Image 1 (cartoon, one colour):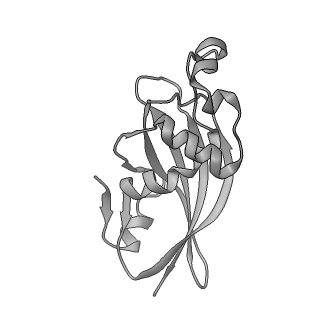
Image 2 (cartoon, one colour; image 1 turned 30 degrees about the vertical axis):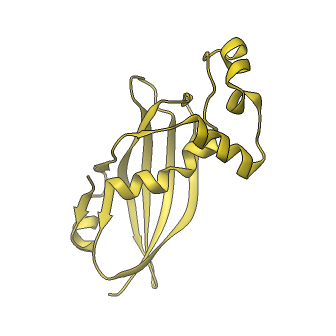
Image 3 (tube, one colour; image 1 turned 135 degrees about the vertical axis):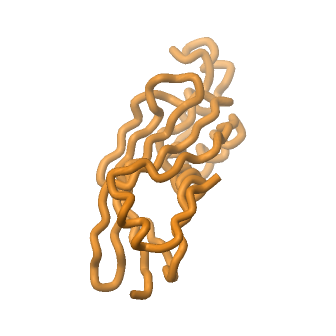
Length: 155
């Protein structure tokens, strides 16, 4: 369940805090295979369960790091709901991203969203989030990213 932030002043007061945690999402082999088809990255470690069981150090297939990265929009939206007079939120990019450990097929992941910074501009409010994607049962995260979102809001 998302942390609901009633207005931008409340959001500004949350800099430096973990604002929300998403629910658990199971990453299926079907999703991994679909991502491989969309991107053309059909490396066996992602799409060949038989070979991965025999040759992979993980004993099964793993999700693409970029698939995990693509899921942060969904997971963050589950974790944080900023209300107010914003007409749109634009993904401005990633300052830094790392994939410390894999997401094996069938694993469950969730995101922790920490508001790192807010910078007011003329037309938008730029927010920088540290998003950490946790894998259920693992101590190391699957992903740590510094993600920049622009909120276009009325004053």
